[in-house]
Image (cartoon, rainbow, N blue to C red; front, side, top):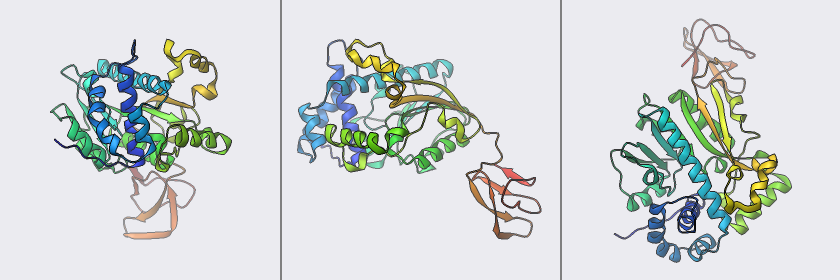
Length: 337
């Protein structure tokens, strides 16, 4: 079967992670063994030869640093372990891989019981469906993570672990927050393991360094620049009640000899938390309103829109009873779905 693909700048970065896992798998004393990644990379390599762009050339020629292979393999191994830990606690659980790219986690971890759903943009899933087959336990959804209709395809009654590996930093922070709050609303008590970027490295001289690294060293396109970050591991707890920080991890935490002197970075917070992984549980929120979420009041009894009165409430809240509160708070009469 002839394989066809055309990818955006962001989607093309998935070739980097596939390449890194494949190369590390073939190295002495590999950090991660990923036979499916090796297979897929060999199948895609002839197509990458024909593709335009410096990134494709570097992938084909192997002109990328070995530390890339090692750090991405360590990251994949950590996400794999988070999945295993989740299974032990929730044997009936489902794992959803947001922005999956060409990840081959299902094939690394499948024990005959694993249920995993890969989700990514339509062009990515179209390519992936040419490479691997879906089953009753391994399925794919073609959608933007921000088009929340994909959540309707999941059974909200089962335990869920959502993975976001190499995704959130490419989205505006408002979109990341909106997605996390939707997951909390739709799948209460779900867990989220996500890679994040430090917001202090987005702008100024630090931002210039990162941009130069991504565009020059990694040959990423202009559309694949980092857009958002957080200040610390527990920052998302401030977004709404019910969001609980559980643990974090950085690749420099790994006692991996291949890292060499990079392991010393674990002792310096500004480097350990440059780009790292955080783990949250998203319980149902107890809040009735949020100061930063503005909603136009509707007086239901008279079916009259009060253009002059706004209240700061969750976006899914609406007014019931006799009248809407004015600016400055939510009084009795508000109901939150």
